[in-house]
Amino acid sequence: MKQRTSTKILALLLVGVFVLGVSAFADDIKARMKKRLPVIKKLKAEGIVGEDNAGFLQFVGDKKVSADVVAAENKDRLTVYKAIAKQQGTTAELVGKRRALQITKRAESGEWVQDAGGNWIKK
Image 1: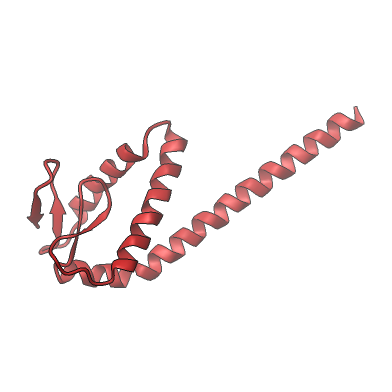
Image 2 (image 1 turned 120 degrees about the vertical axis):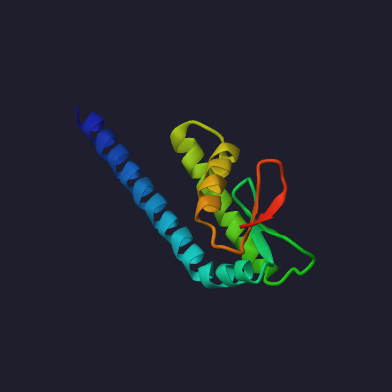
């Protein structure tokens, strides 16, 4: 009985550590994304990047300014999409496409978005 109780306590502790770890990890991603937001907004306003139909940033033209920021943002987005997909029992691709629809609706006038067919449209 004592071993069973110890096992249960250990299991609860591991779950707690895991949940706190995931929460801290999510907070870290959120902080990084928030920090990059002003640069991304500027890139969008300048027409350098747009939101593709898969939920990621893409360069619209030949100008590849702040490529490191774009790559970091897309990496974090993929991590978030995978976590949501796992939680919902679906794929990261589907989560990204759903997010792309939300982003397109909220896009500012003059920003580039990609339609379902892959065509770039200036909103």
